[in-house]
Image (cartoon, rainbow, N blue to C red; front, top):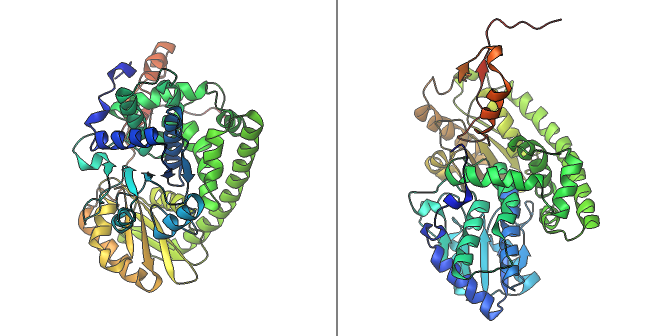
Length: 452
């Protein structure tokens, strides 16, 4: 745990349906097939696409890259997204869905009916209706282990499996760890087991990255020298996410794949501008949401929060939902309603309450929904929001005890100031990287007064 080594990484072929996925990808390589990578517009999505593109390119296969837009096609494999994909690249022989597709049963059935093979690499929860009828679904949720991976981590494992099946002397998998660390930290998955090792070595790689776009992005974000998880979470990640929130995530993907400094700098500047726009939009949404909070009564009497507005940009409601959830210590869903009266919601939870389980309970009031226990999305008609709010609050009231709805400051240890030596901090660094399921310790020093 304290000094993890890459040599301890497990066999990638133990992941569900990995061998079938690898076999189909190598078939596409050998036959020079028309292959489309279909991704998601967040950091995990674009890093996954970059990783898959790079490994297949190393085998001599140039893939087409398709990213849906949040406002037009929406999240994941959709009929509109597939149609646009066909329009741009023609009907592919193989479509590889990354960070999406697990719950897209009807869309995958359509691809199969049209003669398109589909491989899905994803970490989201399965649909209550079962798994999609694809050629391979590389998703740890099909088994009992490795549930901590995000899709960037899974694509790293796919790359490892490909190299085990067909070695490439010219491809060094370790050089992709900077991208794996970006996706893993930004997606807020647990930093345990292999994730912790990948992020630890990935942050070291990110500090010394030779990628033109990442070097420029680090400079704009003020990230120099040692790179830690908070640099990814609060500086690099938000800038990479900003493009997909307000416009197209292609800017972020192109930055990761930029092949010269001039292009890397240009794209980094575009992401910085997108991020400033995102901050302004987010501030306006947060101000309106806080005003709504003032009208819901005493927070002690509310088990969960559901707010909606026609003024909100769907690209930032997840960020604001996270802030309100932390502020009130309640499961929170914010809904952005479009001109047709259809709302897209983004939710964040608190420990002890699964958003996915609650969405399943409330499904009669929704058009759709899914995600993780701690972060999920929904779609709902405007006239059904009140009914959904009531059902969602009832689900939270049933699942959460009074203690679980009470915010607690958890202290890990009491220390004296004289204990905080250089040797202490050298040992403390061995506990890094900090993140989900490996939180940074919080220490208490008593009888300390500030000097004025």
